[in-house]
Length: 600
Figure 1 (spheres, rainbow, N blue to C red):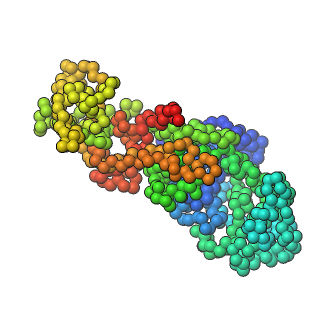
Figure 2 (figure 1 turned 90 degrees about the vertical axis):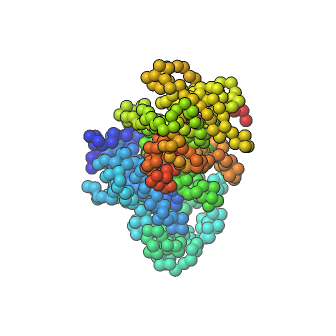
Figure 3 (figure 1 turned 135 degrees about the vertical axis):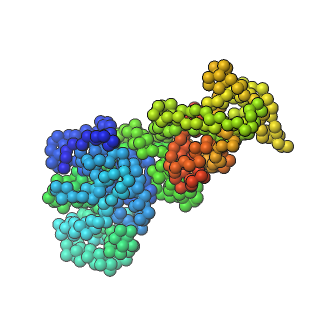
């Protein structure tokens, strides 16, 4: 296995930027010291009990980027040791999310497809952006884990306990109260082996017995007070079916799965720091022959104005507050992708927030900034009117149509230009006209002028109203010499507005998404009811929008900047040929900054 990342050539993606932090420094020291033969192997091991969210993205990016930087491998492993909470749906969503997020990093030095390396240790790989990710499963190791458990029993370091879960918790004590030995702690090796094999054979009911490590019930670290290693659970497993009725606990399966796969650095979030002594104890107690992996912890991502708990996200689904795991208001990777966030923008965001040892709250505006920067550089500009108001240009011929030239992206000259049809009847935004405007309103007013983007100077000469007083139509004129190249083209006008041709535009549904909650930490405090902080304007659906004709055939997932309005993405589920549905990804500017500055 190569010890350095191969340099990409031709159209291959550029190497991920290297940012020094304590994890990087640790890996560099270990390579220099020759640990594991200077080999680096990391892993990302989610439990398939829900969809991945933006918090997982930080771990994915860290583990895969470190493998890439050091020419190593990173395994995707399903931590599937709890059959009652896991499902094939979640496995498939995780595979897709990981493939999507790291596809720009796929090359020969970063593997995700099951293979064997020179040492016989499995690695996983993705060789092309469209290729599915083939993960490892902790459940594939159930046979080996069972044998390791029997080894601990034979060594006198594990025993079968008959205490109920409630009794086990009571005997454990608390951080300031020592635990008590289980009355079953001193069973003989023979009795423990017999009971453990009968547990595996399905002889006992759920909760009747557990296998526990024999460590120290007076340890100040409560996780070392004879932790449970195996429990009985008569439930069908998504991957192994009915083959097993006893299942290893996370702490037992995790460290040994790392060892089996040849992982060198087990990089976890800070909540697992107190578990590290148990991670080390299990590996050392088994006296394993190969060099052991080590665990390192970093601060998890906590993002403002959302929830990061799978349980609470599931509650949003169950109570029909959102439409699914991929609802564009959700912090899930599938939700962000459907909303229009790119993998590049999320990787940039994770790079921007860095890797530290200190938990904190990350401002949601940083995530929004990352996608704005990404889309500003690559998204084509178009014009769309979300709340249309009809404009009739009285001095423009009824049968005339002009094709006006417009730049697709001023940030990217290679994006070229497009032609926009201009005709007698247009639509403009309702908000771009006021009969009785306040001071410094530089858009259209009765008798006033504005410049139409890419077109002429427009003057309002009359207003038509419905019986209820609503403005339904503006009667206007244009300065025919004010188009680019005309004699009055340079005439200074303070306001410029966007528009579409009524006879050429496409009608579309546009969904205006915003932050799901009105406060940064909706679940702060003890037992909070986060539902009282739901943002009533997190979704507004507009069905009468009028867009440039080119958007009629927008491809699902395709992103655009609607000029003056924001960045929008054709919905991946509901967009159909000739019937586009657009999701607002993000506004052009941070509209929440002013809200935060308001006095409470």
